Image (cartoon, rainbow, N blue to C red; front, side, top):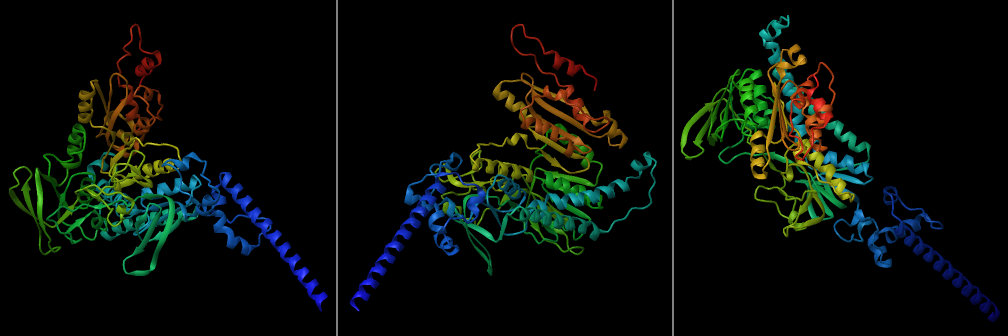
Length: 600
């Protein structure tokens, strides 16, 4: 028995030594692989998939995956700092980086959030979106898209009702009628279709969409949920976060919205009824476009504007032409220099809406208007409440905008960028247009990737989709002259008319002009304005020239198909004259002289 016990003890000892050697070999292998994995830059695919470890079972992978690939644990073990400079844009990278659920989390999925998500995926970043309302945001659901559907339908109605215009082309039509609900359905169906397309485009490229209202826990952690819903919500982590929450209509004090007789653009797009007389508070893009829709459908419109003229943001010369083409020929009048200080709701077809008008300067009540309905088109304010940005050491300004740097980095209370947090679109207030938000989103992703990028907001075009359209990029002539006075240079202005364009004349749409403002000494383009047929489509030649730092002389060499409306800009640029270089003996370059003299 003693011999057997000795043999058994020796066998157990050998087994223990063997097991210890295997354990040491395995652990050494694991440590070696950890060092190798951390020493080499890892692709997005490696970050997102389970590593293949030789000699490890599936259960071992599950057990050891966090300890091997959690950067927090591994970095503490071997003291690794990621060598990639793009991941150190805000200083040393936190060793937690690979433990995040996503590379980028985007709060909000309007046009800006969507554009940022697409670019993020193209750059190999694992991306998610948190959206508390509708995919597509304001633009797709309550703004740009459905309003263009209403403008398209009402524009056709206006055109077919213009018997004189059609008769000039040999066209005769009978009485023209329309179905209000059919027009409204066209807008809502378009919005639904575009919303579905946007969602599908994100899902197709692997973007995760979480539903809920988001708020910061810290600058890498976002909690989300919906009020009263316990089945929706959660928490995600991301290395970088982009705020893209957009904006909502601004309603001044003293005005109560009922969505029926006193409403914002959100309600107006539903076109639930067509009032006989509509007061529109504000004469910017939103107000002008809805005046185009309502007058085409038979309503009378009165603008209420606080400053002493309507269309206050327009170039003065363009505004005067817009007055002649968009206002005077239609059932539109205006009250300027007054505030709508109190608006009492009415009942459709029963009780009028009462609007108290107060002089902008004296602050005295000067009149009370009674109309069928009132559209409040006084601009928009950022939708940033509830984000808890105080948790990341930041705060909004008094208007609710999130302060950012030129690289879209959120600024903290100390005036320094908050690491790994960005804000784009209407929420930062730099330029409240959908396509500007998308461009800012792309810029933010570029900066996240360590490629410094600053968007030139002077190159972002804008358009008002009235009939005819108005578009511009850059400064008004008045702004350019103020700038010239400060910086001591001379302003050049050149203009051309749609009446000289063959395509416009073929359409009997000769009312319109284009205008370019530039520096006489360098040819730098300061601004371009267009009013006329398809002005919104024509502006991009000018805006892209500003974006790529082309001068007005460079554009003289562009070739335009004939006969097209684009030749309006061809004429415009070729008429521009820039001063010769101020160098002794310098002459104007032959190519520029030849191009300027070339026939239009």
